[in-house]
Image 1 (cartoon, rainbow, N blue to C red):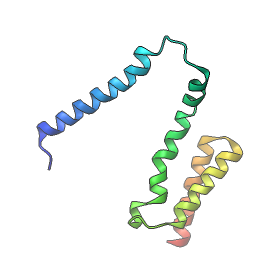
Image 2: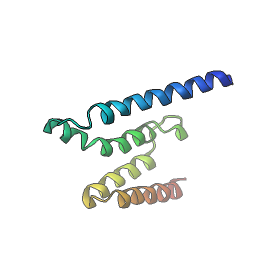
Image 3: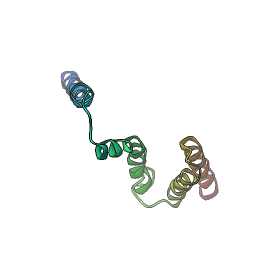
Image 4: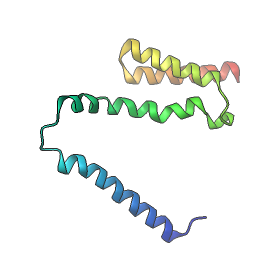
Length: 108
């Protein structure tokens, strides 16, 4: 169990760090002209966040103690495939979810 004072210290430190990281981009760089190559790379930041959050859950799922799970890998492949073909984020997430639950229903 963590002490209350330590918990609040961590919350304040994380909040301050998060604010400073955002301030670097919004407060210091927002009114300046950025190079085209940087803008092109920043455009893909949002697209990269979701796979970065999901990849550990697919490759080393805690539900199987980190062992490879074909159901999760199939759902991830369906999600990527539908996303690639349709370019629709919501449809690809829905297809991956349906694939995951159908796979769990079939395999167990």
